[in-house]
Length: 317
Ligand code: UT7
Image 1 (cartoon, rainbow, N blue to C red):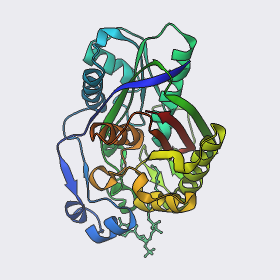
Image 2: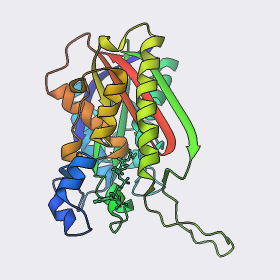
Image 3: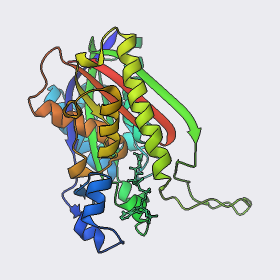
Image 4: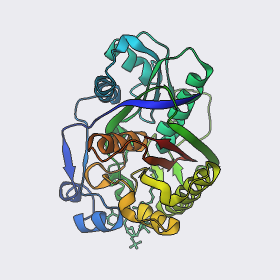
């Protein structure tokens, strides 16, 4: 048994942080950020927690699916910027939307949403589950070093959510992990132990951009190609590819490697930057609501991030 997506939703905070405003905080420029990354502006939360953003995205997804929170059997959230370690973000979301089902988080950095979706698909395949809420939500602004221009210009806050049910849309998926904490690292802080003698870095994003860049292009291209081969379709059969929104150049290079028109890749990085685990569901929700998806369309979703990790899947709409 497979799954189908019966509703999607997204939420981004109102506060817009433009490249020009950022240029007054660190030594950067609108031109550099647009050319090297493809971002014009991003959203930053000034008062909402990541869980509150997730709950708003979830409400919109439930409305699209035509269900109430009472009907949910499972909630799985992906995040690297939860408001607390415990309760989990998914527990908060359960409380905020008034659901009564089990809820837990997964963390696979920017690939997290697709890991969560695959996990939920496995639960539904086991039987006994009707509707599951799967979301990615981040308040990355709280874990950025706002003095580090190589990272603070890239990320943004937001949330995206799917309601899924048993169905036949989810044709194939692939998860990949290859340990590397040099390319991307967010330590969890020194902690309070008076006994621990090892140095631990600040709980802030540290990234080797170029290493991550190379991993991203290779994985996006290989993963999507491999999934197509696995289910006996060609890349040309895909109507849309919804990639993690990390850098326009990553997506363009991936398109080139796969010999596919870049127009096939859904992009909104210009408006939101990289929202980590929220990026794929926010993008997919925009695409679904744009009216551009037609019944039967084959859509690939693919992401990569810290771990290092990557995840991808193919849906038949
Ligand atoms: O979702 C998580 C995964 N993360 C990613 O996918 C990120 C992948 N990597 C990237 O997107 C790119 O590597 C970055 C956007 C992070 C950086 O772009 P780059 O073309 O790889 O730049 P670079 O790190 O090679 O730096 C080139 C120059 C350096 O100056 P020098 O040494 O050539 O004088 C940097 O100091 O650009 C400088 N630089 C900046 N200049 C203006 C770095 N950040 C900035 C900045 N504004 N914000």
